[in-house]
Length: 176
Picture 1 (cartoon, one colour):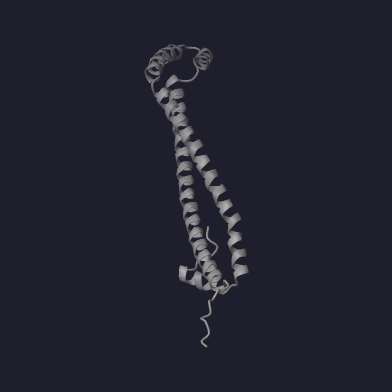
Picture 2 (cartoon, one colour):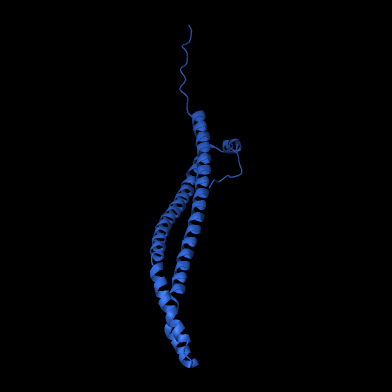
């Protein structure tokens, strides 16, 4: 993140030229914590993206494995439906109710619920990764702007040091 986001490079150069060398060096050193904070933010985002990539891979494998059980679930669903029809043919309401409770949930409903949960987690992780990548791009842009500012600042410091440096003039010999 730049310290002077609304200034062009020419405006920055003129602004920096207003200060003496000591002030410029102090300003230059004030960028150190600024860059350290940016680097920490970038590293944290990169670590989160890495963790999310691992999570996305895990969820993708989990979804694939879950989808491979569909034929087995369909077989169990057919048995469940057959048992359910038998239970519903019972004439006593109480026995029918107890039989329905004992039958439990449909295997296909449970399968679909689990698939929905995996897909929801995949969507959440994908969205979070996208937001982190946008944050990384933003942080990178801020870092580039700060680097540009420091380059201009260093150029001004160098010019002032060169201008203020003692000069060793060789005097021409006096004529006799």
